[in-house]
Amino acid sequence: MKPSAEEVVARPAPASPLSERVYEALKERIGTGVYGADERLPGEYDLAAQFDVSRPIVREALERLRGEGLVYSRRGAGSFARPARGAPAVQQLGFAPVETIADIQRCYEFRLTIEPEAAAYAARRRNDEALARIEAALAMMDDATRQHRHREDADFAFHISVAKAANNHYHLSALQALREHIAVGMKLHGLTLMGPTPGLQRVFAEHTGIFEAIRTGDEVAASTRMHAHLKGSLERLFEGRLLDLSL
Image (cartoon, rainbow, N blue to C red):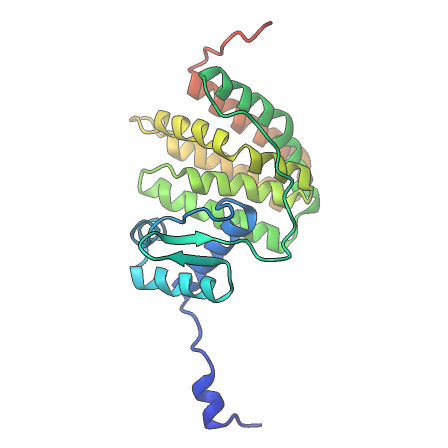
């Protein structure tokens, strides 16, 4: 049946491909906790720079998220995340704040015990939606690498997406609780990649290798490559001089 004139007028215009990309990326970050409940999102200018789009495109994506109740605004303060009602609750774990360089080493050591296994489970259990999430984070890292930048948010989104693909909320909860701790290590590690050597490209290749192993269902390679990536990050950060944490 041909729609009436009123129905044609009332039907919303389809979102542009660029707006759709920004919308999906922000929705994923909110859903996986990259932006926690009531956390302020980056400003429109920063988001436009991150996604290499115009500010009107960002506003269109934010307006769609507001319409779905995933984002709310405060006058003069910006936009804030509001996870969807009914979304699976993530168990809140408690970790003391990072206070010393030893804490950063301990965080990496802990990640080395859980993330390689999460990658193996992701290779076993992934589906098209999970792969799309990981690939979206990888695409953001690719854009940043081409601009000779290191983006901690894209890096964290990649690791969160792998944990989500493992379909084990314990892996996801642990990474969520460690978000601020991981961010410190990622920021410092990112600084080590800014020299004349092609560090950013090497690290991006490491992430790409992890994704390919997960995509092809190779559990052993996914685990091995994740372990090598984290171990390499730790060694680059500490320049091979790890602290002696013996009691």
